[in-house]
Image (cartoon, rainbow, N blue to C red; front, side, top):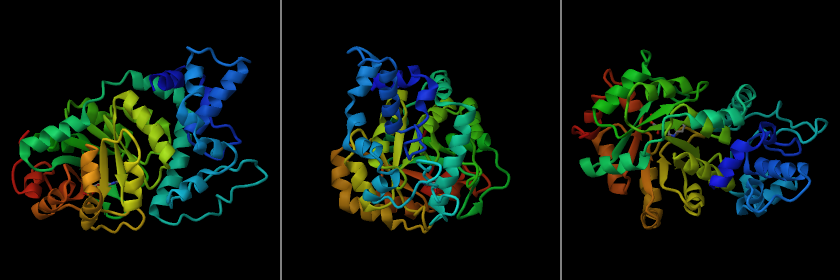
Length: 381
Ligand SMILES: O=P(O)(O)OC[C@@H](O)[C@@H](O)c1c[nH]c2ccccc12
């Protein structure tokens, strides 16, 4: 994989724009594979055995059936749908005369709306700062810290699920959670009161977060590892998060086909980052359990399609797949809708090693002090 990343930083920037014949707008394995083939063609020879191009051309992932299918015209949406993914991407037309119908399309639910907005946002950000540049910036970021290590240490210290405390101003389902919002103050107060890690929302449009918040918290001297809470659809965002100091990043299985998750996991690994892979139902969990190299799975009690919260979701999924998850040495994070010590005990008994909590802390006058209320005890740090 080193070679893949080295390759991505040494290939010309232009090579990363997906060719117009592809229906995806992301910097996907597909785009990278085409870029490599194009680069090999440009030098009019097959790449030498020790070269980066050779490594890429012979990388199993780039020659997988899915990639071939994709390149032979099967759209990202049909590949995703075959994996049970309901969120559609707003694909570009293959030829201008075809049209995509995208302008007329109506999103089916909130998550789909967020993803469509994200596609526009990411393409604008990429136009300003191409992948090549963001990869370079990521090389200058302070080194990534051990997110999973911080969670396991906190779990054994407290004999309670480690806390990932979320710096969250607003959400589409709950509106503004805190008017007087100072991300650094909140982060410091979480850290002082025993949070193991922090989650920083970076989506601006729907959550009123920002990458500036991530960067200022990272530069404020807070030592807890930071999760970039973003709707990732493109590897560009992973490098960007790293360049702003993120130690971990969220990947949502409801949005990303298997191949994208595998590809993104490799990039995270190469950057020293942890991927928290979020699932909401059994089908997503089963897909993720088939992927090698997964260390951390989040079970979201909230459906991002309907926003309904049901804390028994964590329990139900762990009853079904807990043994397999333990055998694989994967840690589980119980996410969303946790308010009381009973809620924490409930997900702890279900088998989680960590919890991700936003609303119930951030709404309190002193978010850090609210941690003791959530756990029914002070956390050691
Ligand atoms: O505020 P809550 O209910 O404690 O939830 C926190 C966190 O789990 C939630 O913000 C979340 C979980 N997965 C997400 C994906 C995107 C945006 C937000 C989220």
